[in-house]
Image (cartoon, rainbow, N blue to C red):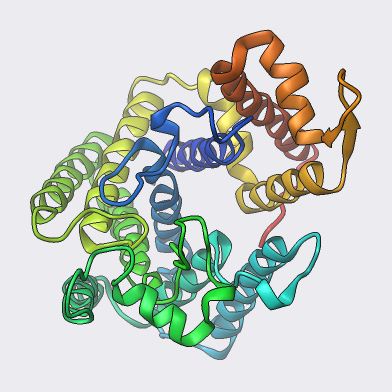
Length: 367
């Protein structure tokens, strides 16, 4: 396996983290360009690619980490998987609780919690089964989840108010512990919809195998392009009866975004490995070496400048540091819409600088 192939993976990981920061940190949610917003329900915007791309990368890395577990799950490997997943889950809960720790209304699930659940299940599957068995499990997840959602609601199985994902979360957790951003209690990172996210990781795992065992870099690129195009097409075609939907993490969404992730990785391999065009990628390599740590830090930073730090603006009004940076710094420079984008870009640059320092000091924080 060529070292450059791992560089391409680091670059993709770094790009994903940078985009996560961009889409999560606009100056104002009232002024965001449409491609930088999630779909309101069905459909897929560029922003909807970010999270599955990250899980795809987790899967690729898993192939190279877990291929040695031919003896199946051991006490040691189980402990490591449980430990990592527990840390991720608790970090996610901490971010949801910070800074007021209102446990009565605490959202239980979130992005890190989704990663934790999907990672744990995927890790155990990949350590226990060979890739052929995993292919059947992958198909079983896609078809089984479709059946669960379809038969889990007497009407509107894929609608916001009536889907099975919401019903399960309401039953187990209650309204007060679910995300409220859809206008009702519904969690896009809920428990049941974490199951198909395992399939997203498995697409990455299968891609890792392609990367290792293809005869040459061009063979790798061709296979990733072909399988990626097939997966994307099947996801698009299936979408006519089973909508592509990030909030439900539908099987069509798994195939559509997983296929695009394979295609994107193929293009990165072509740029970096075949063409040798690498200078542009260095900042993203920095991002990619401490991905989860910088994601947690960025989330904590935003909460601090929203809730804990206040600044008196030119009008003599005390506002959050977040609002001050947007309204009093970015808007005068670029206007409301472009100022909101500038705010996000400024934070990408800031967090890149943090990752650059960590990279230079050879500090790699493992979670």
